[in-house]
Amino acid sequence: MSNIHVETDRLYLRDFEKKDAKALFEMDSIPEVHTYLERKPLTQLKQAEEVIEWLRFQYKEYGIGRWACFLKENDAFIGWCGLKIEKEFRLFTYNDLGYRFHPQFWGKGYGYESAFACMNYAFYQLGWKKLNATADVRNIASNKILQKLGFTQTEQFKHREDLCNWYEKTVS
Image (cartoon, rainbow, N blue to C red; front, side, top):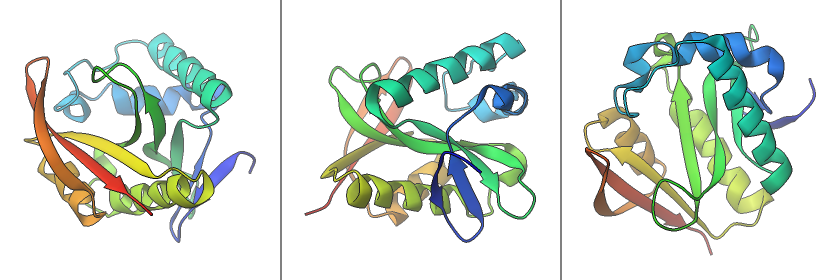
């Protein structure tokens, strides 16, 4: 398999490819997936194709981005996890860790497992010294993942109508 960046015992993460559009659409069209994400599920396959084009642009522009996440045991697409140079969410640029999974894979530890691997990639492969993440205050699972990873909540901020926790983690 080409373009694999991170592997864990159960998962591998690779660049998104055009062929992943259907699986991404199936996940991102589920309203429940967007409960804490501005509540805008995808409605057309073309939207997933555009997301993948944008992700592939980030790979070229920054050398990193969100990666498609698959189970090793059967190559099932379960969501995404990865790094991003974030320029739009806050009023400043930062190195962001993020993840999103299909609901059928929630509660199985994949979020923590993939985020841990991506965090280590950022610190030990890319040499980043600081990583940030955000989570809606109501998203208990995401907040727990970030806390378990050792991120420190340093503030709260409003994003549109939603109150979010701001996290940071540094490595020396």
